[in-house]
Image (tube, rainbow, N blue to C red; front, side, top):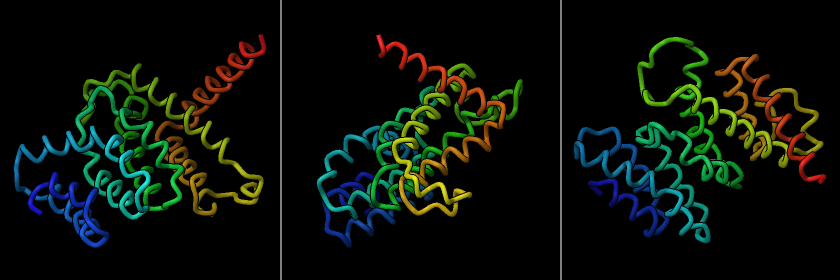
Length: 217
């Protein structure tokens, strides 16, 4: 297979062995100098269509879903949604709940990939951007960070079990969706800092209280 479209066709349609070989080939093609600009056009199209293509294999084998998600995660950092870095977040939130640990881990990596650019204005206030997402205004980044925090916190609350009380550190939690969500929240806290996280928490709690008040009418 000499192109990314050929690899993804095999990932989605071939048998177990051929699909796995194609998934590994994706990394080699992404980091090679072959195909030039055409390769990046393919990458953009493949990433943009990922949720729809994944939906087509939801009823198929877990290994096919794993091969597809792992292949997307290898090239995710090259996506071009500069002013909308969260465009795949709804799909990634669903992957965080998958029973397959490799799929969850790939989703964690893809979300964490966006945290650096999204928190740049927090970590380096007043400095001009020196890398990707140059057109992302701090106000938009703040809104995306809040939505990320709110969705992750809601998901964490839904996944919580009393047995988790005994675990003091994230790394010691049992492998599963709850741990994956906690890993992202931990990385988010490290990048944003305590004061910013307190702000996110207060806004989230206030919105919850407002929604409860409205629902009581």
